[in-house]
Length: 390
Image 1 (cartoon, rainbow, N blue to C red):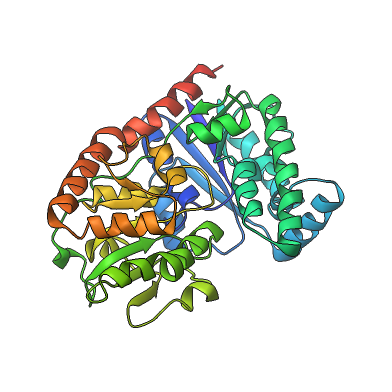
Image 2: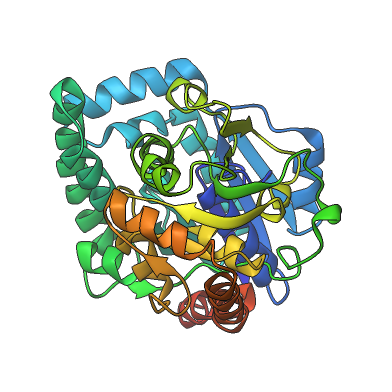
């Protein structure tokens, strides 16, 4: 089949969860189909990144949206009662460029990622699949419930607008997909489940010397540190969870917060016992340098790739219910789960005991390698796409 993939961001380098998902889906689909890529971008795309995707796809094109187009799009979206983030990804020039690309490719199916691609693909007469990825309305509602003042009002508007848009997409696309059951239930039971995977050849248990960092850490948390749910989790970890841990064990427990573009609130967490690294050339170094992975997610949606990566690297994990549930893992067997600062701190302390540490690490590693390989994760998507072949 000829599959045209439309993305809201160029899917390389792999520094965001949506890019990681799209990249590995392209890798798997390209093994058996002709895959053409059209990506939007708000930043210039490096030649090496473009060339790398060209080794995977039959052909690649991208369109850079300018800041003034996004600003105008956001204003028009607000005046029209549409989601602000759809306005941010709206460009008349991009829509025309995409339409030309689609006419040139003549795909059997167009596979779009996230509702952010809706303004670009509108008008297409091809069979279309939309990967919601997450229920953005659910994500926004959770952020709204934790916010105050003007931000809460903005998020309330965005939540309602996204909810309407997600429902509208059900009739616009021939099929829709989402990562996790909770997100499917937040949109509609008819949405297909297509989980995330992890590259177990890339993320694997190897000696620390393979990924040297100058310091070894007890605890690590990774992610894009400009993303609001990760910012909230990092601040909660250092300000409210770790004081309970340090009260019980005041010496020898330190924390690494690793990930691109840390917000000022994250950089301010740095101290003698807390390192904020920013972007690392190889994120595996962060996992390999630590003994315990902690992802105290209170907001957000979808499946946390960071947990899959940490488990694949042999780290025992501590997280919350909203992050653990999409994995399908068993709390107490594959990872430890808590929803209060005290519960998470208690679970961290449990994993400082070697016997518990090794049991959770081994069980989590087996779970990920057996259940969350990328070939297995992409198989449901490929079946959906193949049913739409003309």
